[in-house]
Image 1 (cartoon, rainbow, N blue to C red):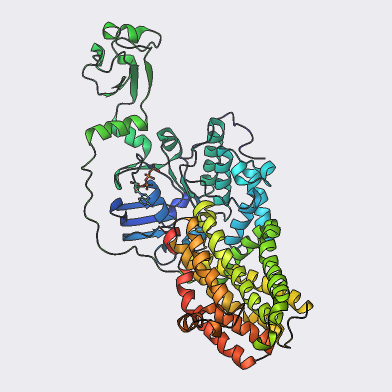
Image 2: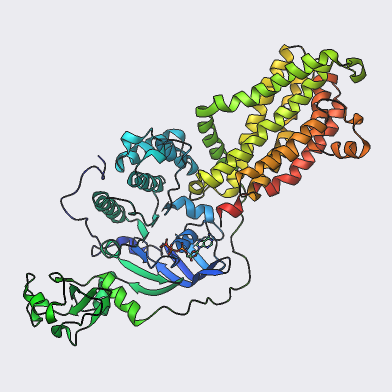
Amino acid sequence: MSVFDSVSPKPPVTTRDTPQPARRRPPAIECRDLYRRHGTHVAIDGISLTVPAGERHGLVGPNGAGKTTLMRMISATLAPHRGTLRVLGHDVARAPRQVKARIGVVPQGMTYDNEILVRENLTTFGRYHGLSGRHAAARADELLDTVGLTAHARARPDTLSGGMQRRLLIARALVNDPELILLDEPSTGLDVESRLLLWELLGTLCAGGKTLVITTHYLEEAERLCDTVTVLRAGRIRRSGCPRRLVAATVPPYVVELDLARRDAPAPAWAGGRPSLRMGHRLLVFTDSPDRLDAGAAPDGALDGALDGGAAVAAPLVRPSSLQDALQVLDREEPPGPEAAPPPPPGRARRAVARPSLRLAGRIWWRDLTLFRKSYKTTIVPNFFEPVFSLAALGIGLGYYVNGAALGAPYADFVAPGLLAVTAMNGAVFEVTYNVFVRLRHARSYDAAVTSPVEPADIALGELLWAMTRCLVYTAVYLGIVAALGHAPAATAALAVPALLPLGLVFACAGLIFTGVVRAINAYSYFYTLVLTPLTLLSGVFFPVARLPAPLRAFAETTPLYHGVALSRALVTTGDLRAAAGHLAWLLAVAALLAGPALYSLKRHLCA
Ligand SMILES: Nc1ncnc2c1ncn2[C@@H]1O[C@H](COP(=O)(O)OP(=O)(O)OP(=O)(O)O)[C@@H](O)[C@H]1O
């Protein structure tokens, strides 16, 4: 039964005053003098904060106060420029994976993976956290039930309503049964009923000993949910404390709220001497006891009768003072400081560069496989049939008119291994260009992954592995077709499939580096038109490069595709293993050079 299926008749249980044995644990978050800028803008300016384990901690403040930036630093997805940060006992700069394994993050943006279905979002995330396929599936079903999305398990996330999408993010944050849950404006977009039930769910989680950190613009929510509230403004902490105590220390317990007829209408006589706050047409008059107001507390006219000359347009509202009232009073007493930020300290963001993990890269590979199973027809058709058509038209058709004796082999036998190398290149490169670009910039599929122990280098390695898989499958199938047509005469032909993997890797690395740099998808037309097409035409696929003018020939012989084509021809047509070894060594050396930059190509986007 989902907590979102029915409204509880009672308001959410508040455990603020209940004993919290978890407080004996070390603090969930400890930061000292944290500082972070975006460009020259200082977003977090020397924050020191301790959140005890088991606490419900609220971060509030106006737009741009730095709440999300702070949450991202705590979740180990954004590095501070200065200061120390420990989460659940780990130094975040040194052990980001360990931190991410024990926390759950509900981000402000809708960062679900829109290329896969609702349930797959949860199973995939479970796999990122190291769950087996069976456990991830069971956990996904349990959480879908908890957040009331079982009926939508097979929907695409972007077809869900805004509130349902938010519930999906909440479910995802719980996949690893986290000890600390960071929720960045979790109730935005939820209807009243869902919000109440979210509060109830959070109350249940906290009663189970989990620590919650919540940012919100709804101060009523912060007051109701949180043991402690920290008020941020311009990247600094302005206040911190128990909401009730903050209110009690700042304003009298009751407030009379008046809607004035005019902004400049005078305050009523009975308000004289009492603390008050004017906001446009609204006047708040604070009082220790509404009964002691001169005009009495009767809501239906006594007070507005007492207003000077009918200054109020509606009956006044008498209510207990709230956190919002207290913060507004404090803001008036202490206006914002000057806008100019202090000059940023020198230095780069501090964060250990996590080495890629083959196990986690394998999870990214598995996610790509999940997606491929749905769309393999549209993916396979161009990659398989383009070289086959080229072989039929150029190798067999045009080849009839070409003098094979000058090439040392029938023209189809000459072209077929060249097209095999082009197949290896294209099979690898498409994946890391268009597909990764869309996941990085549009589908934002990786934003979720990096809130799990998966790091950007794991994603890059996973995508390279997937590109290699495609390269292997496409070359194997194409070689099978070529052999069946009798155009692979050498006994060593089958070796071409694994031998061409380094060629695929070279182009996959180059494509990934390019993807890390480009800003618009149109830029790939340069990559394809000005790099891949000339390479295909000039690297010896259709004629020996010896026929090219000397400077062009010298250039062609340095390209990876030239070595790939020569390698393929040596294995598929001539059986010259010695020549093949030389070209293979060349390709391996280039792949080794490009691997490092390729693995860290996505870091700038996913950690900024
Ligand atoms: N990636 C970024 N690049 C440049 N500036 C950024 C980036 N992220 C945040 N900022 C800036 O840093 C400041 C703090 O932003 P942040 O998102 O942390 O505030 P916030 O308190 O979460 O705001 P909101 O309540 O609107 O979500 C803002 O001025 C914002 O424009």
